[in-house]
Image (cartoon, rainbow, N blue to C red; front, side):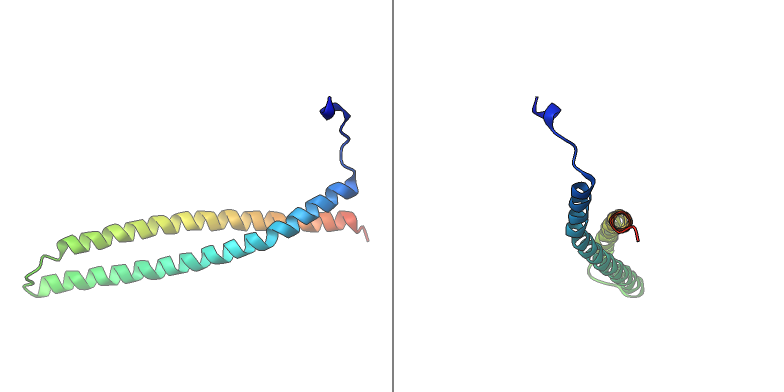
Length: 119
């Protein structure tokens, strides 16, 4: 019965709530987006260092008779590289979603401001 007697929110109240939610969420979305971007950049740098180290280990193994078999370490580095690339792909997807959400927030904010201020 309570649901039947509830009145829909008037336009001003709904717009105020929408604007408040957008204002509340936008800084968090932007901060998360910045942090994801930073992590992605460090992941790329880490992948480059892993590649360089793996190449160095292969060259050392080929040029010298090393008393330690380096192949297992090269395999571990390659495995780590694959994991870094997987995390990087996940972060890229998250960043794309955050960008879409941020764009939606910006559009919704503009739309609400245009509705509130028709001039």
